[in-house]
Image (tube, rainbow, N blue to C red):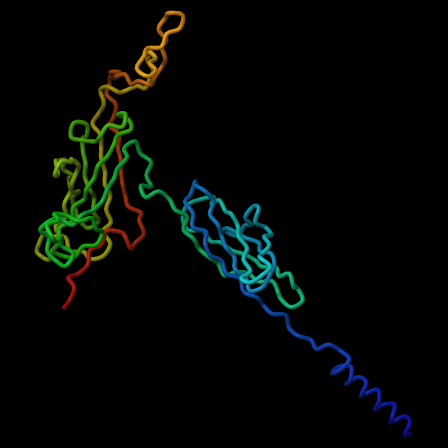
Length: 316
């Protein structure tokens, strides 16, 4: 009887001892961290660099819009902290793009795989944003003589800004070049209409061409204020600039012409004969019936913080 009890007791102690002394304690694997950054890109230009920073070494699979980025399916991190992996990425489209990443740790015993939080970047597009034969430049300035804390001082007649206060006068400044006219400046001789459409204003604001201290361009005005007839809608001012060229009765055609070849002011000759070379040249061709005038538009797609905005008069 004593021998049997002793055997049972020793077996029990052996089991307990195996759990405490003889066996290794079991630990749950740690979930590491993975954070994405970078990715600022302009569509159609050089690649952007996406950076993944992990809390442990491993490999990172980079993704854009849910699909693996070619060449970045398994990028190794650095072997010392901070554990960083980088991916050179060429965006497939402009606008908001969701980037993702998955970390596979080198130490698979103590660390689990982890996905980075979704990271949204905005792939840049040109501010103009509209393909048209008339290329426009547009800005807004605070007119001289306007009131308020943003009014020009120290003799400055106007100041470029996108932020205005009720009571100030907003001036749109515009110039354009018409590709169909060989890049000619848009002026009253070749422009049928030029205007600004503003949300909240019933009629388009006409643009007028004139000389301003030695340079000529188009201008349109919004007078803001609380009196009847003045613009006083607070917040972003949504607007669109349109320029329409006059009908064309003639067009410039790019061709070539022969000119004498001259080097260092001396005409080049070979075997006693003058050498000629071809150079680009425009010639004017009459067209009948006339061609419809080209149309150019400009609508800002700057970030909201730099859009034209009207604010209320600050309180004391």
